Length: 210
Image (tube, rainbow, N blue to C red; front, side, top):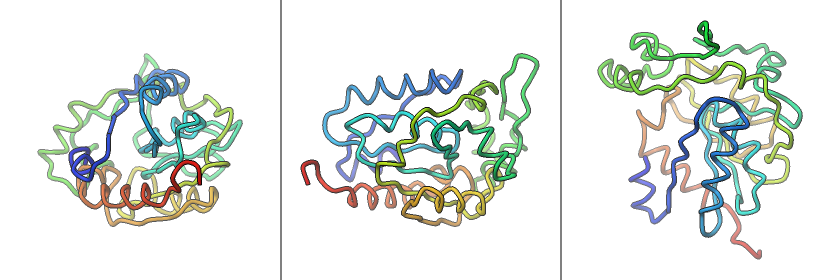
């Protein structure tokens, strides 16, 4: 997906979130944002939705793109919003050290990436980093979607975060809603289409000064 966006002329930087806390992930994203020149469309997938909701308050962020993502409000954590919507995510069990792993190839294929081959799902599972369970209880201080244009891509064959829940997120934040018949890992199974939709969103952001 990155190469497809680059071929369309975009400068793309993929943030490497440490996944140790919301605070740490937001800090990592802000460091990347500080290096960008020009306007930014900030994209967040899954847990990354919470990260961009906080980090998206940076002045150079002109829009937010939520990709089958979790979207808390101000003073709300991911755990809060999932409880409010009665929508637990699949496979979210912490180990004895407090980390959530998604490294079982079969579970990863069935829950996260049911529209890619089992071989590719096994590869994805092998590089999946764990996330600290405590991150889900950290609250967003100021939700950027309240004052910036947002897009939400609902993945309609998603077994990790139910499409109905995604649709509720999109509606709650007043996002421009897009839909794709894909699993939770749509950027792997449908990279061209996801890149096309991100491009569409980026083109919908008014240039600075207007």
